Image (cartoon, rainbow, N blue to C red; front, side, top):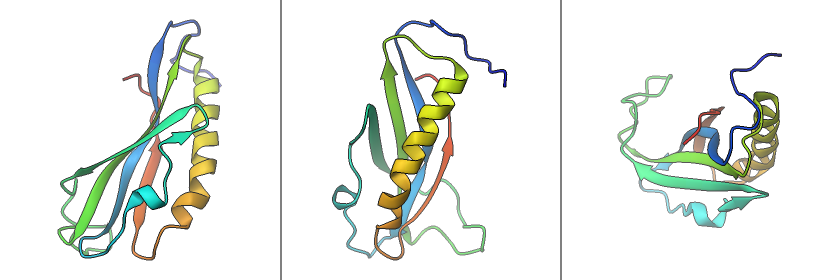
Length: 118
């Protein structure tokens, strides 16, 4: 598999996963109880944001939800190639899966691989 990322790119912060986590605005959900800020060598960040879209795919309005921008990033001393970055993103995704599944009913998420440098 060829990739657009070159090996030996020097120190770099790379976004591995990007997306959103949300829950009903009236739900008493503190993500701190369910999600870590560190995941092996990656950092897990979430910040509350205005809903990024007006409706979910099923037509339900997002206005009654609290949304968080969700990012998993890693700082590399020497930026690896695309295959290694993809592998790190997959590892992070697999580690997050059970944690996200353990959140209370009503918590939703949409995450995708995003290997852009910050």
